[in-house]
Length: 143
Length: 143
DNA sequence: ATAACTGCAAATGATTTGCGATCGG
DNA sequence: CCGATCGCAAATCATTTGCAGTTAT
Image (tube, rainbow over all chains, first blue to last red; front, side):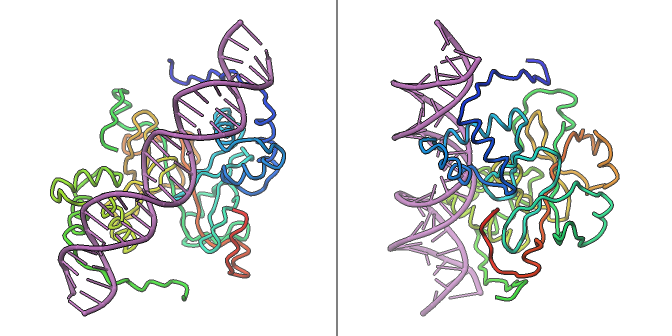
């Protein structure tokens, strides 16, 4: 398959998918799959956790929701797809929305954003490594 | 317990811990616990995976190694504790060391660092949320 | 029709933990 | 000594998957 294969797979508009999407978008929090499952269950008592996982995958794949893989925790999901950052409170553990990165602030030790006192950050790049730029084979040895 | 409780717990210098640490520091890659287990096993045939996990925890807790919780993957470990960033290749999946962040480059769409073509990044803050700054109780409800 | 989708239950895979034995300080 | 640590095995926890029945298009 060609690079950049964005063939949208055929999707069906099932009530499960619709309700999972609706409920997620109605939240300002960042629920885990299980938390969202409990919420969705109120409207669809027979829904399964597997269906929630599968639909979150599909919605994420289609760019309709955001999947947050934050350090050392289960995945959390966000109905807001506009680019923004997240911060986890070191005291209560909650994940908060934070405004888009302001690069100049990284020079400082501790800055404030929307009342959130930022003490640290973790930055993870993605892209193409030197080897794969030359010879894009699957070299899945040393990670 | 007081904030900033850094009581160093009493540690014992076991051969297992020593060898796990040595082998990790001797690698330029970022092994998972299982990968490191296989390596350590060559010198300690009777070591258990649980011991590797427990020692990696201890070493991380004591700041002797770095634990990488990269998006959607098992944890990887790094013997280099000097601050630096990591990038995952979207083609081969390998994790690479990258130089410390250069904030100005974030303005661009695609930049290069040490031959690694950076196409995206994920930023995760940590700090104190507005509520906890006022009333630092454990409010572990909505995350 | 037919392939995407569902609920259910079992499987998976990473990590943690209980336990009785061991051993470092 | 004695409690930190070990090996081992079982447990846990999030997530995925196989399957047979269902349903959207």
